[in-house]
Length: 232
Image (cartoon, rainbow, N blue to C red; front, side, top):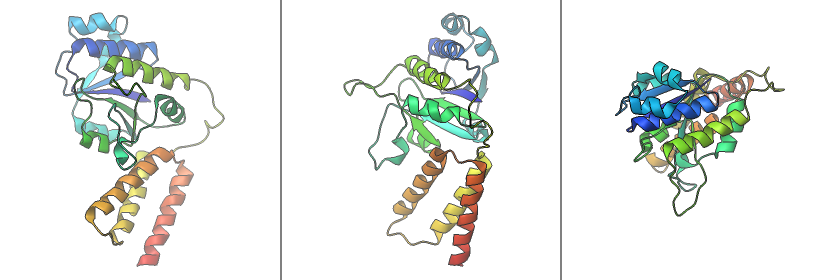
């Protein structure tokens, strides 16, 4: 299940327009982190059109509650190089394909209208998505971005698939695997602490993007256990 999360939305009309786009593309759960405007105001309701029910059910939550999701996906218009791993994104079509095979609770984060998601918020995501646009002006309005991404998600959803019987790993299993990775890295020597931190980020991104099945996750955990035994 996909939940749309707006981080500190500033404009009530934008909240309403995002709700309308959600309704257009079959999404229904909206969460607001520290909103700066009223999502039940007349402006928001007018922009939502026939999506009033989404605004009525929308909840305000603290940022810390995002930890309850199995996957957290960020959106960004600010890209990095190959060395800026957290900001190395998927495009919306790639995201749509991935989400169609994902199981568990998924949070799709949209940042502030004026400055998007912070580096820390991006780092806390399993991976990020961006919409390829003109280099001259690559930042889209939040409502336009939302509609494009929602469309790509819907495009690959809603039909029975040959892999429906496959059970995918949960957040708990990913955390266990990453715990073993950190233990292994703790026993290895690096020339600087920053290089060790980079390894941790790389492994988090790889495990997040890999879409591991339960069987694959258990195999990976077993392999890490053996490595730790060899080191001890």
